[in-house]
Image (cartoon, rainbow, N blue to C red):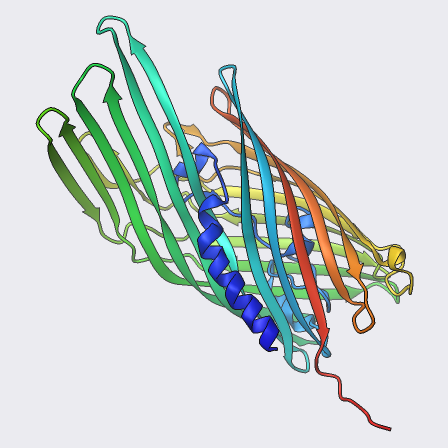
Length: 423
């Protein structure tokens, strides 16, 4: 237990350190940032599928109702990291960028019969970008440059409970949400002595609360149909948004600063999810998820025409559909090769923000991976999970992104609660 707790504390600290390196997308400057990939290593191999799934030897954070199914003799601990290569293209200009990130750490155990608990730290949003836009003005014989940079993101530390009565299970997560963002915009000219800098910041510290239901319908001895539903509470984050505009003159070392503050500027959207999955003899699982995030009714800070205030129409509802499957040749075989888990998945998501008057980029992704049993003299139930994911973000007339990501996760399945018998 001590080893697990130490590993979890180290992982939690690493989340804060590495969160700012989780993305390099210029699109992360909009809204609260790029929506982070959720779920543990099992979910990621199926591109995030999990609302209807439950298992006794995998941690599924996609639906807290699944915690009720954790095996009675084990303590589960799952942690993962990722590395990605992104190809950017706009107006014939191409560029590649790499990132590496510690993604998550979660643990799960049974509290009592049909009641399980899960704890962990997960990313929520990511912010990270840096680029320069230049334009030559012939009449002034000057080059106008605008540099953009930003970092930050949101993370959550949570505790969840799940309970089961017959074929129906219910659960909830409650957690602490923290983080924020910093956006910088600097306008300068190759001939002028004046420059204009804008800095947008927020620091968020709040709570998150979500709920889940699952129902399992037996279709005989070998088959079952699983249904799932989730709800994430939308609420005010009680965080202020600040904007500083600094007009400086390099010849006289003087700067004029305008400072704005918007109180209670941010909200989390109400989130709804539903899932359906079919399982055959614990060897083949196929599922479909759908989620809706209701951003469209929320206001968001905007600086325009010498004012910094909350504005409508900057955000929009986001929809996501995920299809995935997992196949195990023989889950109870003694041969390691027969217990490898093969996973594939695909998803499509619409943006939750607008860029000016047009919608942000739609996102399409594919994933494939496998879980390899880690077998030694005392443990044959832990897994090394490896998956590859391709993500495409694009919108007509703007930047196109293609990201190739490798996810690596380890699920430790320790046999803790069995009683020893001395003969």
